[in-house]
Amino acid sequence: MSHSPASHSPASQPPADVTPGMTRRVFEHSMLGLIPLVYGAGAAFVSVAYMLPFGKRRRPKLDVGPTGEFDGELVKEVAFNEDDVYVLRSDDGIQAFKRKCPHLDCAISWRTGDNIFECPCHGMTWQRNGKFIKGPVEKDIRPQAFEIKGDRVVLLDEPASES
Image 1 (cartoon, rainbow, N blue to C red):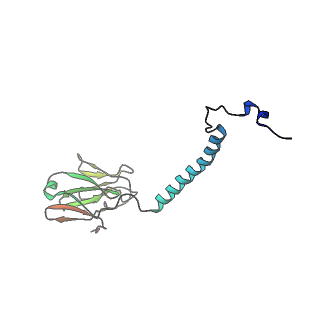
Image 2: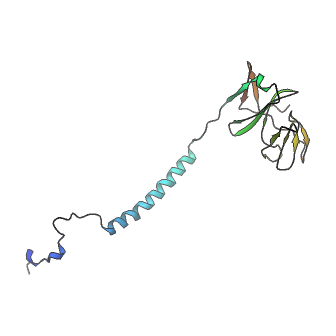
Image 3: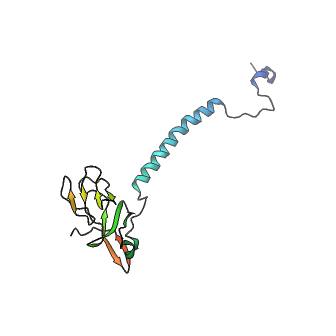
């Protein structure tokens, strides 16, 4: 049996002025394939970002100001690498302390009116020179290493002597 062009029904032929486009089925299959690729790319990016050394670089030094700035009652708080640091002058000279409680690493605060440092977690207090006053453990505030360079106070990214 031979087929002639006249045997095709006109309904099976698209109209001459319509170009075939993306059908719903093709779109759905494309999305089903694309979704796992997007998730896979995201997981790969996160994995690579975790393993590479991105982020802030540690600064070896930070100039916090002239020594004359600390002649009064100023207690200056500065961010240095991953720590906050208090810089001030006490009877013992210019000093720098980490803003972490030596007991549980809570963020200590400076109470100007009382001229003391205080830990809000459990009430430890220290004198202006970082020496222990009261609290559950008898520890002074941890010092931050620094140097006087000319007439400038410069914080150093190294362990401080606990003298």
